[in-house]
Image (tube, rainbow, N blue to C red; front, side, top):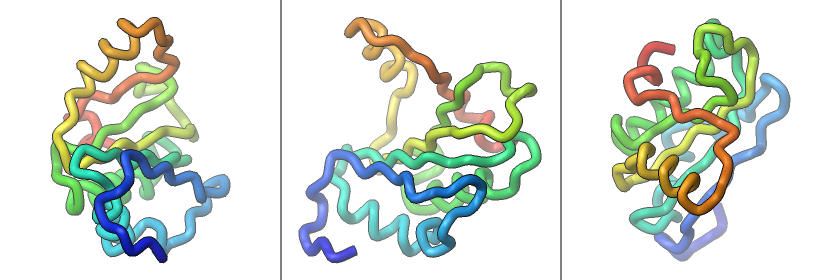
Length: 130
């Protein structure tokens, strides 16, 4: 909030969440706009989110808020399991960027570099159905 230099960060990682409680001011559209202004044009915002995957009200709301700031196709959700029907309360990572991200390319790049994917990228349309 005190940073005066806009567009300087490659990555901002949000992990200020405590159990199922999240400070409200960190989830607003205004705060997301401040974070976006600090990112480089191809910078990433990553945020840990803990919620009930099927019954929670926070995660869908937070994703919609970020879509208002970053664009509808520029917000993605990474989960611990690809069995979306059986995910209960879980930690997920929301990925947002002003630049359109090719998440399939992201997964390929991780695997090509010898990395191991221990999470799954939810298909884009799935984010709208939670």
